[in-house]
Image (cartoon, rainbow, N blue to C red; front, side, top):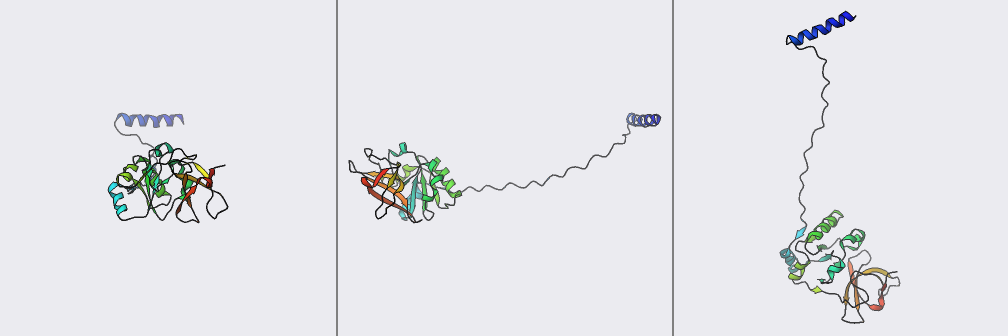
Length: 213
């Protein structure tokens, strides 16, 4: 038995020296690879309008809601008349306050945050969400009135409060959207969504507004 093994080994060595390849065991079949699917082409979403587009909307008297997503400190310098003031980080928790039937024009200081918010709103089903590329300054340049809230009032813009509405017994939670008056008594504007309908703006006297408990 040992001799037979030596003979076979000698035969292999002889073939290698003479240039003849030794017999090799068959290699395993290649593992099939799954076909490579072509990458889907990413189609850019049209989300932005510029100052010219905004002027066209104004000329057409297009129904829209201006959604200002800046922070309270930024609003001290003014905001667009009748806009909905809602800081960016609160948008996901307050989607139910936004209308689906209106064009929502999202604005910030320069157009970066508003683009991100508009994109998020589109993903959440708000197909009419848009970003103003030039920021809130484009609103003022196109003639939309700049509002500056009274700073001496007990409540300030974006404060969360409880409000008492006419002909309603239950208090409702709202955020201050504007403060009117140069001195006391001040009046407050709040925005509420009534009966799953569009936004309604209420202007309330001081006695109808109190701190949120």
